[in-house]
Image (cartoon, rainbow over all chains, first blue to last red; front, side):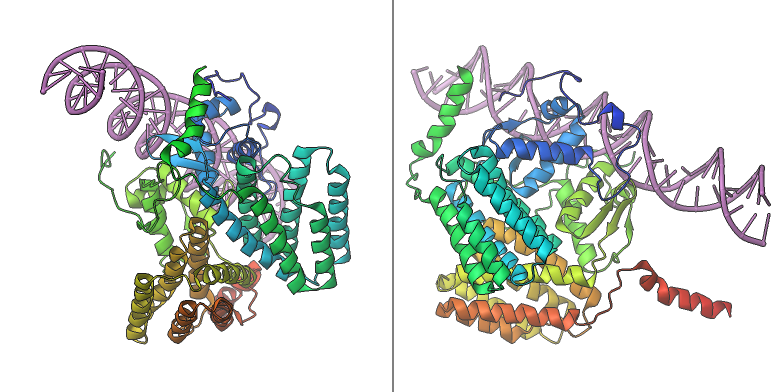
Length: 258
Length: 258
DNA sequence: GCTTTCAATATCGTATGCACTCGATGCATG
DNA sequence: CATGCATCGAGTGCATACGATATTGAAAGC
């Protein structure tokens, strides 16, 4: 987890030589280097390969991805907007370390956003869209219990899928963001087996959406998310004492030193 | 060149200290030139000093603000995330030119977000907060009909105020964003007198919130926003296609030639 | 005269250098 | 031994340099 100073070329770089000449001209598939780094970092953060609170020096990231600080800096800036990275002026970037309160805030917003999603979709799903959803839920069920990591990924994907089906780009962006943040929060505060995001609930939501029962779909979604949240965020903050708050930090520091 | 070592620029951001001391050690108070430029551009765009679709060359902006392209570029990137600027790869930045459909999408999300706001606040307002709200509504009423621009600004501020009172930073950020985008959309598509954002409705919402009637407050807010949206977005112009946009210009040219 | 090709230009995308800030370290001091 | 202060260094903040790319205008070809 320690990001060490590595000279250029030691790691696989984003700017692959093969793609050098002809970059991303098409606007649709335009994946800039910044975005690539951003996505990679987001992934790493969500998977907790980068632990909350970890420092993210610009040049270390640049080296790691074979780009300059410019790209790293840009990516960090955008992740900061997303809430996955905290930017401290003149001190650098750190992996976000959301408190339980912040976690609850994110879930509150997420519930509101996904309620909109259900209301937009109820009764308006086309056959092919229904097929995609059903297929996704089926895949979730198949893998449930076998692969924890993949299971969580699919669960998040389900919600993103729904958001995309609305065709509302604003909604897609916001839902994507809160899902990312929720992933981080669940990784931090969730118990090992708590993040299943009940597959059966996904199925029920799809059913309600198909039936065109907006109210029920919204209700199900709300309960679903409330359940996910409470599974993780139950622990009421008894951490009023400074020592309790600082304990994990201290532990991590000791871990580094050893 | 001319500009150097102008370490002044300590313009305090819009972020006011309403942010309570919750959260981890070190509240991010990142204030930089980038943010200053970003705020200035946002203001200019919302006020339509920069017209939708206008090109925003990096060095021109840097020049205008006495900074380098680096800052301008960063600011443009963030505004693009906010949806006020459109970034075309290798072509540059342009003031967003949202279609009516996009406008509707934004309003859909806004309604959902503000519903959360009302649900968070209903029955939980403290006396001093109530006073602030009442005062704001009173000011709106006083200026109503006298100063159109200021009236619109206050109307937007009312919604931001509510969001801030929730203490939910995520919510604040999203509401701020959609309010900005709605301002642009209303400026583009709204009729001169359509943006009053009915002051009386604001008052009613506050009343319902104080009364603790969450359902009614949410209902009022929803109707309120739906009214604002419909006042502006009724017109089915659908000027998405560039030919439609250029039609009037072409007509004028033909008129000259004949 | 109209289309096509190519050079020129304007701007973007990225890298890099330098100055400045802030935390850390070590020494002086009460 | 704890506290305050000067120095040092890591790393950010910003400006600038350079190569890449799209657009424009002009010249050549049909």
